[in-house]
Length: 152
Image (tube, rainbow, N blue to C red; front, top):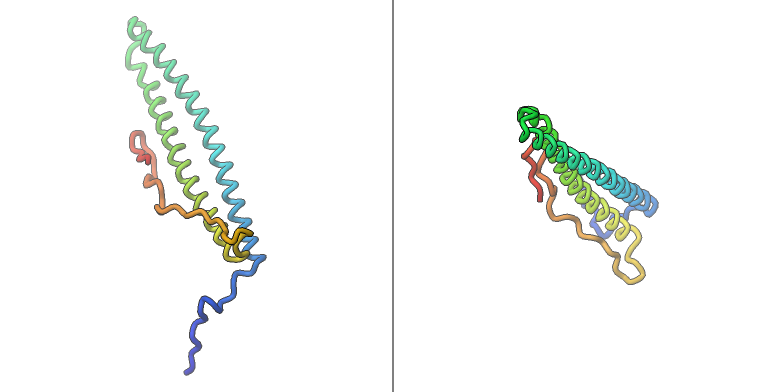
């Protein structure tokens, strides 16, 4: 039985230009979506910081009332829980931002490589391709509980 050797990489056809351009466009759209998501998360973080500050002010008022014996210290527990939840949410924003930035760099690297391989180098003779992140994942956390976040 005759077997044809696999085609060498030199003789294999390049990705058709239109397919490459379409794929690059989809990757760039995904990176733009990630940048918008990053903005939404930043806005949510700002909102959380405002709520955190409000909770701190409430806590100061309750602490003052407790020192005057007008309030039981057990009434402070819900405020402390809210503060803990706010800190956890802020840690989530940081973790999500790291993942978004990491994924954005990976997608841009893919888009740049597709452009360089299908369209060739730029007018200077060297297409710029940003290096992909070295680590497969910048965040090892998969769930969040108060005090359990690993930040880098």
